[in-house]
Amino acid sequence: MNGYSTKMKDIFYQYVVGLYHNIPINVYGGFVLVFLVGIMYMLSAFGLKRGLKHIAMLLLIEYVLLLFCSTVLFRKASAVIWGYDFHPFWSYAAIRQGFYSLISENIMNVVVFVPVGILLGIAIQTIKWWQALLIGCGISICIEVLQFVTHRGFSEFDDVFHNSLGCLIGFWIYRLFVASSSRLILSVNLRL
Image (cartoon, rainbow, N blue to C red):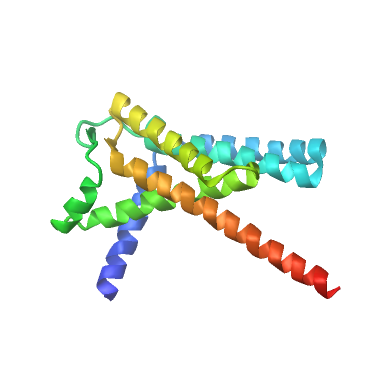
């Protein structure tokens, strides 16, 4: 089991490094600069409570742009990794046939979209679960279509499914946090 978990950690590390290593450092610097200026502006213009929602929206936009940068814009075009497979859940059949590296790829496709769901919940507090799911699905479809058109990745239904699932999980994490913090605040108020 220890050898397996070490191998999984290596696969996760390679996946994350593979996503972000092609993005030039000045792009990251631009994201940080826009975020810092945005924080200052939004807090001064909207105050703390409303400003936090706007900051979450800015962070959401920047995170989605970073996803586009890592999966499409700064990924090198290659015939080796270009292609498509729109058969639903083909990766699970491949895993059963011994392609175990797809397990970590599927997990990472879920994990990478969890922040999208969390930030959607913070930025748009009235959003419903199905709206968050549709937004996550739409972002993922855009990425897959751009990867196919630009020859910068492997377009597949499974990625859309896992990304959408990650967005939904992130949304529910946000909802659980809000519900638990509301109960905590209510119990403290009742004791007073």
